[in-house]
Image (tube, rainbow, N blue to C red; front, side):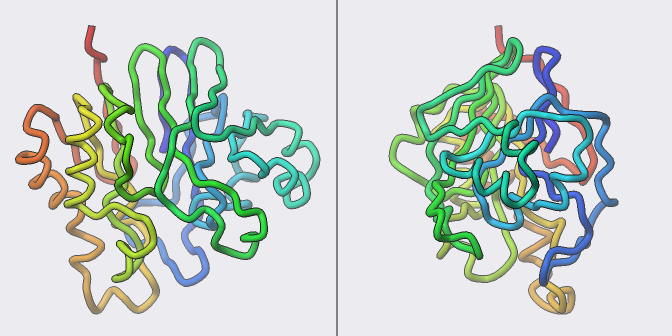
Length: 245
């Protein structure tokens, strides 16, 4: 996701491909970035969030904001120049990018799965503070202390995933996403992390799992967080908001 605030452009967990292992892009075109971001925010090291070919495809030489301990892995995998651009954070730490502050916040998600699980890298989200306050959750389930992230101008809330065991691995579904929105008290919310990539062969069955989470989140949010405005974006669509004074 491309996030712009106060003249700073941030790219979150880029996946600029049409195929990833058993997943195939089923909605929207292959992403074309509008330019070179100032920084890439990488929430954790799972392959659908830390995709090395996509990082190589990002233009320019942006900072890479990564979980603590990941810089050495980035240098080994992508080259020393990429490792030198890493800024490592753990939840509670922050860095500045021009006039914008990027603060690492907790996520309830096992960041150590995958071929590099030996790193035991923590998963995290980000609160971006510039003209507005935006929460990008990465992958997470509900957790104690989530309410402390608010109030927010915008919450980018993951509400889906790749398969029927979603809830068992530290993810939000539409119902828990609406509860997250209630806790963080965001003025605006956009449901993310659903509908774009489907496992090969799943187009014939359980299609509701991939098509419906965004609208289901919107429906549930109307009850759980009636003061929030929810926008369900199509792939490639843009939302512009004016932060609260």
